[in-house]
Image 1 (tube, rainbow, N blue to C red):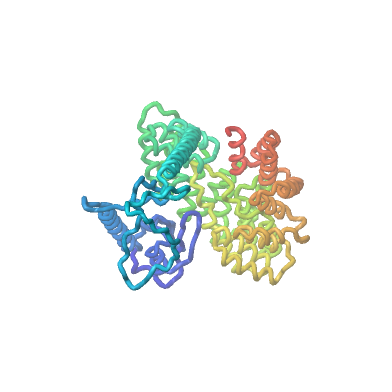
Image 2: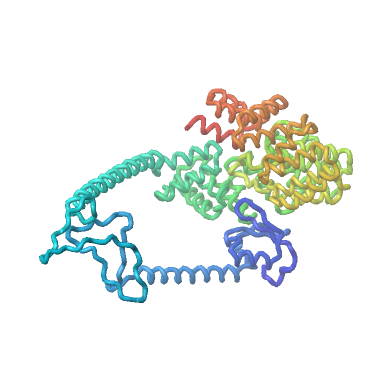
Length: 592
């Protein structure tokens, strides 16, 4: 893409910086943010019709990236030159060293008489006690003094005591410092882990589904020592999925396939990892060829079949993708990813072919599935709203909107995803357009504005969400679903007291989402009693709720009842095996 093909005046650029989605901006605004270092060249950008790409690799920004790198190189050289010049010292340099804290002892017989002051017209008017004049013609003897600073013997005693005291203090200070350093070093030795321990922990975290923690531990291990080939193979899928190091992970797995003696499972996993890396890079042809190799070893591998269906969807073959996802879902009814992929491809297929039958079947399956698990629940409920909208069922749309708003928002981050499936098509970056279409095609009402606000919060457009919620609150100040969405927004931006005040309103008393929102605030503020009440109420309304079970486990942990905490964790993982907070709490209970 060249800058000639981009309209610099349109606000159509989005920036992904860390976990935030910023924008939209004009091209000149993105360029200015790069110059002022508000965003980095390693951040990602995209246009509405494009895909995410690193700024440093985007042709539109090549010139500014080149200038930034040249500027960094120039600054680095200048800084080095200044540093060398500053720290270079010639033999004639004089460095004054003062010690204002340690008094310098006065040697005996030292003449302390100040030098004569040159007459400048000013007179010393300090009164001086008159001294008697000696009548002797001989030199006057030194006057005997008791306590005067001139007493040599007293000065010697003072000096001696001062030296003893000073050296005693220095010795005590050194002793204390030694004890502190020793204790800190021992503490550091206890906390610091070696390469083998770090690698063991990284692989264990991967097995437990704690992929982010696994990656962090692995990176610490690589700083101590380059991992051996087998360790790299074990961690390659984590590098690809979590760290987006598609090229590095792919090369590791390609080298692993050459080695003889690999089991069929290892070969299939390697092909799946390579395929996902190609999908992340947008090379769908290579990904498809690689997946066919995996299926050659294991024809009914669910991850391989899911990836092939995702590729068809990415190509725009929605009818074929819909059928592929449906076949997977019928044979694997617990595969939420298969139902989600089918939902996305079905609504696209129905828009082009006006097929009401596939939409009605989809609505039925979504309603049945969301009762089983919270994984992608709100995302599927959004497709339920969208399908009802395509069917033209106004009552169905209104009921679907209420069901959507009854869920705890922001739950996507609380679930782990499979390493061998390119699951990123489930992200809200891709779903927001469906929210916008629903909002544009339906008559505006407060609850629909609340739904649109939830979608905007998911992609971190909080200011736009706030405007819609202000309108919804003005139109329906007592609507329970509008109020709960407002409370969720206030909690998200850190205004917890205001959020709590709304959640205590009687209009929300029957909503389960109210208890979960309140419990989340209680945990953030460390209020154990508050959390226990909120999560107990949520648990009584839904005993399969992973969020409620996690909250009760957290309460038991704070009350030092590890046995009860573990019981809640086990029950929660039976309901939601990939609920990240429960996985982390189980790891804490079992290994710490």
